[in-house]
Image (cartoon, rainbow, N blue to C red):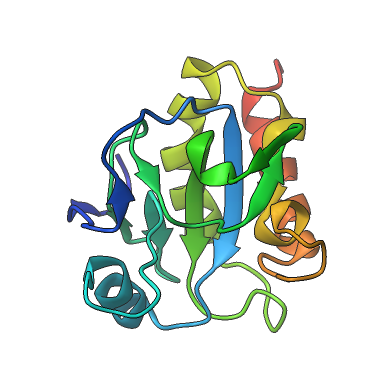
Length: 165
């Protein structure tokens, strides 16, 4: 592992069922890395939120839950025709800050790939199983993160990694 990864279990997750891990939902936290970690560890906030992982600008990563945990990252949403909540069937990955205002750093992309690639293979995902929060949130238009530009950059790098040379 090239990038630093820390595990800090979030209390903001479902306890009854297992996540079926059908795909990945990309987010931006609009916060700093430290603020995002505080939010994901805060079980007293009015809106309890968490992701499976968040990636910092320098590539450091904090993981908040195992893959099969249902983290609260997508709210009312739909994924691959499953309505209600994409939380039940996706892994949530966030970048810090506002993805509409800047391009990702190489470190952010590489760290995210380190996190995603093993899951991409394990769950036999295809690139069409990678969505942004804005693409799954209901009603459509309710959320705008992560920017489609970031998603395309991430998917392009992912496809380069998995394509035979």
